[in-house]
Length: 238
Image 1 (tube, rainbow, N blue to C red):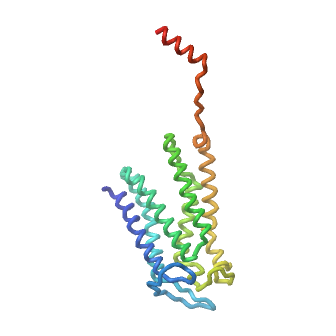
Image 2 (tube, rainbow, N blue to C red):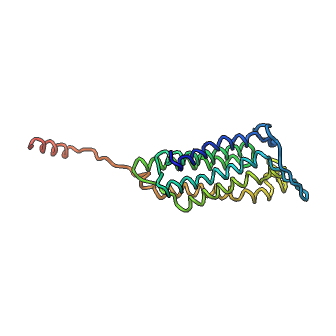
Image 3 (spheres, helix red, strand yellow):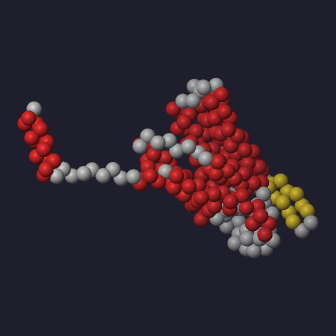
């Protein structure tokens, strides 16, 4: 096994560690577990910043896992270590990492369920499109808009590990300054809002650019009586 594949496996092994660290933190009105509630607390003017230690560790590991996504691709191209295993599991590892973390964020009520549904559904649709194009021997290349979407989503998720209404002891479904729908949290959520909009835009863009391949129907003409007679006549002539 080459180094590019080892780096991909490291990212896969980090995923369950990150998820466990996230689900053992109790939050108000969440479906998570009351396992480890030690926090880093900083008190300021009329606000208390309270970051769970497990979220701090999970966030650092998430950053490391995200960087391995860039590293394994660079290593594979730089040292000609592109393999079938790498092509398949690199994509799987990316989706496992982002989608599982998004689901836990939703369980903790850190982000809205509708946003998670859109982001995960977008990945599913793109995978279906890619498979259809692969059957027709067409490669769907990533474009600049897709790269911006991925970077925005990763940036927004990293922020949520360290900053958010949960870390300011804000309340779920309330509109105070430090609550879920308060202006502070809405500013923090801007990258995720942009990532959601870009997810819809890129999905539509990929489908539009490949519309001829996706929706092209091969018309098989039914043989007419004249063509059958001509064919039979030709065969008899042989």
